[in-house]
Image (cartoon, rainbow, N blue to C red):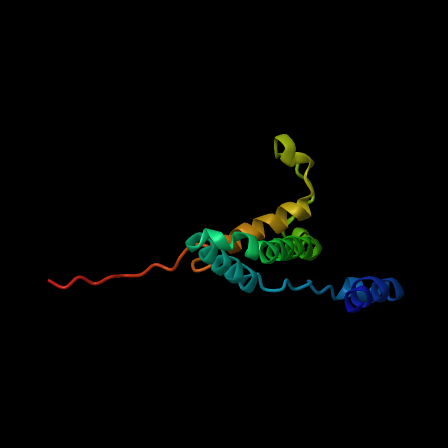
Length: 130
């Protein structure tokens, strides 16, 4: 309801105020969802008999990731305007027909996945003394 108020009703009631001070919608952090997913997958990998009992949790985690990407598409309104991805004429194939907001959200998702400590394990240095 709050999102509707700030992003729909208030801009319609006061169109000049909305254009003067646009504030980007902040994305909620993805790290807790990915951390939970990583821990569930480690548990399932270690004991395959737990797959059926963890299946509802995995389904919920996948829905959370899909929800985050959908929120990213909403937040992309400001980012696309800043980056200037209004047209995709130089992109070939099926990607040319894709929504630029979805592309931005998925690229942000992939960037977060590739951060050290998210899905890529933290590196550990071992010192060998001679």
